[in-house]
Each structure stands twice: as C-alpha cells, then as structure tokens.
Length: 501
Image (cartoon, helix red, strand yellow):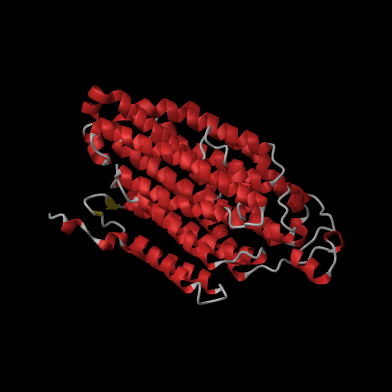
C-alpha cells in the first residue's frame, strides 16, 4: 500500500463533522446578533456525527500511516462523548441565558473539545493521543471561566489551566522517555519490542510509563492528583461542570486502557500493585471527603473522584472482560451523573444560585417529579438496583473477582456503602424535610418586582425550558434502561474490546 493510500478522510468523518459545524458557528456569530440558533446547530452536529459513528461499526480500518484507528473501541467511546455533548447542549442554553452568558462561541468550544476526545481514543500513537489531549483541554480552560464577572469561575479556569499544563508536561516527558527506550511512539511497535527494551532501557521504559500514568491521573481525577476537582467543579458554570465530570474522565480512561492494554501490555503486571493502590486511595478519599460536604455540587465533585476509583478497579483487573465492563460503566455513568448535575442546575435556578443541601428541603412537595428524578440519579450513583449504577458496578466487580482481585472488590463494596450516606442526604431533604417558605423561587422575579429574596414564595411548579426537560427525561430513561435491560449494551461493549485486545 502506498503512503497516500493510507490517507482516508472517511475514518475521520465524525471529527470532521464536529469541526465543520464549530467553524460554521464561529463564522456566523458576528452576523447573527441573537444566539438562539447555536444550540440547534450543536445538536445537528452531534446527530450527524453520531450517524457516521454508527455506520462505521464493525468495519475496522486504519489510516494516516496507521496513526488513526477506526475500531469498535474508538466508536463506542465516541458514542459516550457524543451523548454527553448532546446532553450538555440541551442543558446549557437555558442556564447560560439565565446568567447572561449565552454566547454562540460556547457551543463551538464544546464541539472542538469533543473532537479532542475522539482523537485521543482513535489512535495507537502516543503523539496523536497527546495532540487529542490538548485539543480537548484548551477549550475546557475557556469554558470553566465563562462567567468572567464571577471570581469562583475565574479561579476555576486558572486552576484547571495550571493543573492541565502540569499534567500535559508529565505526559509529554513520558512520551519522550518511551521514545528514547523503544525508538517509536507507536503503541503496537512498543509492545513488540518491549522485551528488548526491558533488557537495555528498563529504567526509561518504566519511568516513561509512570509519567504517562501521572498525566492521565490528573485528567481522570485520581488520587493524589485530584486536588483541583472540587474548586474547578464548584466554580465552573454547572452545565460545564456536568460536561467536565464525564467527558474528560471517559476520554482519559479509554486512552489509558488502550495504552496500558496494548502498548504497555508487557509491563501491565508490574503496574498492577500501583493501579491497586490508586484505586483504593481514590475511591476512599473521594467518598470520605464527600461525606463532609454541605454543598451538593461540591459533593458531586468528590463523588466523581470516587467513581474514578471504581473505574481503576477495572484497569487493575485487566483483560477483555474488565475493559468491556469499564466501557459499559462509562456509558451508564454518562446518564446518571449528568442527570444529577441537571437537577442541581435546575435547583440552582429555583434557589437563586444556592447549592446547599438545605435548598433541597421540601422539593418533593412542590416539584415531585424533580425530586423523583433526583432520587433516581443519586440511587444510581450509590449503586442501588435496578439502576444503571448497580449493574455497572456489578460488571466491574465481577470482572475483578475473576481476575483474583477479591480484596480490592471488598474495599470497593465498602466504599459504595459509605457513599450511600451522602447520596441520601439530598433525598432525605427533598422528601422528609419541610422547606423554608421564604426561599426565593426565581432570581428574575425579584428583579422584576423589586422584592427581596426573603419576600418571594416558592412557585408551585418550575418553569423548565423544554430542552432541560428533555435532558432530564433522556438521562432518567438511560439510567433505567441500562439498569433493567443492560444486555444489548453490554454486548456492544464486549464487541468493542474484541477487536482491540
């Protein structure tokens, strides 16, 4: 095959579609004063890209000198990214408009970030993975600081930028060490010459793999590189936080699985004790710190750290079954975790921006379907049957037990039980506690009437934007379907690993 024959634009159509629409949004923005059209273009981009992903299933191919892969593993990961992107668009428009920051450029940044995630998981070349990492990260730094008049948002952007740059430096230095030890950045070639490299350059090889692991540990919020998470999640706009909590984590875990199950397959056994410790510390620290939080948004930030620990259980277990269970869990996590943040965003609007657990008091009496949705998502995060969270954890723990990691599973189960305490606090407040009758229902009402928040009663029903209602409905449906009827989705996850392992 000639070099030019390996250049196939068809395998990049999902990415190209998102880029074309993002550039179109940027070009149209100066000419269209109102930005209500931008979410629609974002949703169309997601749908068209999704069609290209689905049509590529079971047609494994490579291109661009074998630096780009189009296999089921990459396609399954892209489904997760597009799902999160679509849900973020649905949630963002109303929230951003309420806070006066509804800008069309936001949706272009969102699409470009997803392109970076797709590139990360569609390559077996370390330099291309690094390129995807940077394409994903740069828009996120801007999105975190979207509320320029808010100090917490500015702080979130700055912290995320510096921590992201720190992680990128580790990752890039790790690539340099791997190249020095093996003479290549292609993971398949690294795997083939691991034996020789271990004899001649073992120190460089292990140090490089360790540096790359540190870089990914920052991105997935693994202990001890999780310090940035609570402040960034709390300060960023809530739709952006919802996107942060799933998209970069899914991309990081998928790329980590590809790197350590393919390129560093010969080193995996040596890294199992390290993965074991990271999994235990990450889930334990995340859960223990979450217990102490009264701010629900901050509590979910620490919760996301704990869930990174559960995903590391699958990485520790290794093997095709563990990888497929991790992919399934990421898909399920995209629904119930995003659903939880959607309810947080709605309550934020009802309570004048407050995320304190007390603001959820009496939610069931006034907005019963919001309270029921909140309970569903939090029960799924805790792992209650018959939700997607239960089956997702079950598949990961079953794979880990089969690989002999019984002690690790026991610790993970104990951590799941610990998490029940803080997940039930908002549910308890919503269903079993009475609300303060003078909490403001809508900040805009206060501005229009000239009344203070202490004088405004709660409205009988929230005025939800239709797009937000659709987001809640889709996440609730996904949480239930993946918990009650997970078989077909799990088969897709297994099929996506078969062509990679």
